[in-house]
Length: 202
Image (cartoon, rainbow, N blue to C red; front, side, top):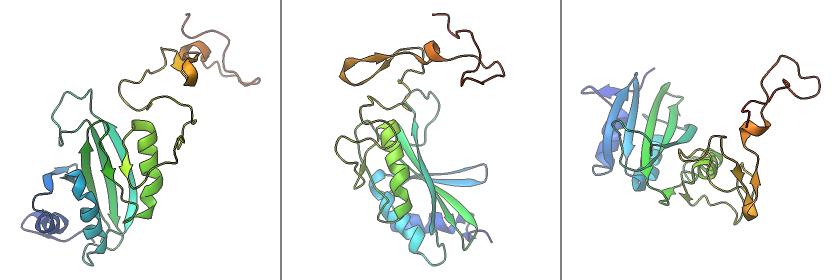
């Protein structure tokens, strides 16, 4: 059963508009999915409403993910450099909705851990890979989540080198570029290697 609608707008959107009249920046329908773009300070209230409303019952936190739009030259839904997209599902209605917020470099987004405990690890992944902090879901000082503790930078940012440059490690040491240690696949891997020729020729 799909989520209820009225006046050609989903009930979720109507209830969010009533509760957060200044919080909704934009509502977009794309490929039969609905995206509600919010101010970042309204994300906790919006997620709580969707979870607790008995008619909507968005009780399943599917995932959240980060996007870096610093190199995007087309139309945007939100103004900040980064976006975080939350994917929520209602088991009761069999419906899905996406919430989107944005932030610029260094701006924190309120955590959803208090609403959906399952948001803890995805938010920490986003922080580790994009550098987007989540207020209330802070890592231990000096510790990364997925990456080694001495890793420098955020590898999913657009300006991060893709492998043609040597990798900068802690204490100013530089490691080999991906091209320098990669081997083409030759169909054999008896000794843990695939191929016998350098890729880059550097």
